[in-house]
Image: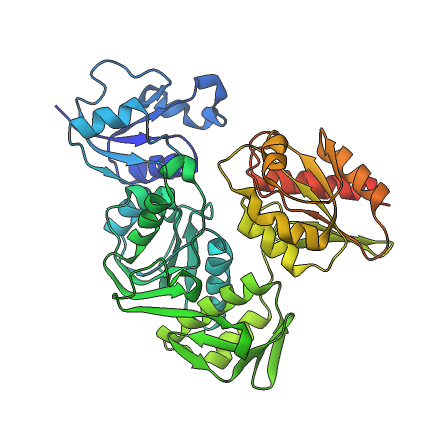
Length: 435
């Protein structure tokens, strides 16, 4: 019997695996948990329609499968995975598949927040310094789609990917931070933490934020980066760098400087500098590249200033730590648009900073009652049914020098396809209503 590869999930990862297997003349089939009419872009796969199975598992479906490639979003509790495990069929990811067929130097990055910004910053710095590099993985670009040769492959890895990966070989592995998230997937914070720490397996250089010291086994040869506010000092690979100093808006290196967006992004900057130092890149060259880095959209993105009121799109904030970082970055008198799809999150941690900085909360999303039950605030609140109403009420209540901030501390899937879709909805509503 001719054996086949089985792809689980027909999203971005699954589609990249299809192209890889077709290009390499490897036989495969696909299973997606959705019904056929729920899957977009099926017209692109008419030539392999007989290889795609939806919703229901056919009898003896696994008989001719010798390896399974699982997409990060595939439900880990699905019966098919249980059957695969019983049959001891190997399970890998597109990352493992890529590593089998590519010899580039790998830099792996994970964390609860900041990982997409760090891989984007690092890609910018390395290419600017003359090293052909690309960021891929959890940022939406599968490494299987890469064309050409690269000096460095920068892999952004989520806990979902690290849960199933088998090949953790990297030249450098870095953890930006670890806070409570994805508990609905991993069942407990300890399991989530252990999954994140998988990134350190079989890596030549281990890096982590100094905020994680109490979570990570320091007996390993981990190098830490971060800041010490009391001494205005920056830590780079376990050494305090006296030449890098900062205030709450700007970071300085000798006579050079540039503005940064919040302390969380200062940590991201120091992560990139730490990696660059390990790669023997001159710190001044690295700093100059960071100076002209343009931040990614949907992350404390000022989309409009009108009548001395600023409107910020921070749709990427899907947990409390990310929203807290946005609130810390802005001055007081914030109108905060909060809420989205329900997820197991402890919102009590936002109470103090909301009381300190927020003048009005506008709740948008299915989890508004869930959040209200946890918050202990004295701030007025309003409920809205859609983004347009949120912007209309924000405009009505905004005064000069206020900030209107969409920072939901929640996923977007109750009303939108993803955080990008939600951010675009915010931008369009601001453009149409604020004038």
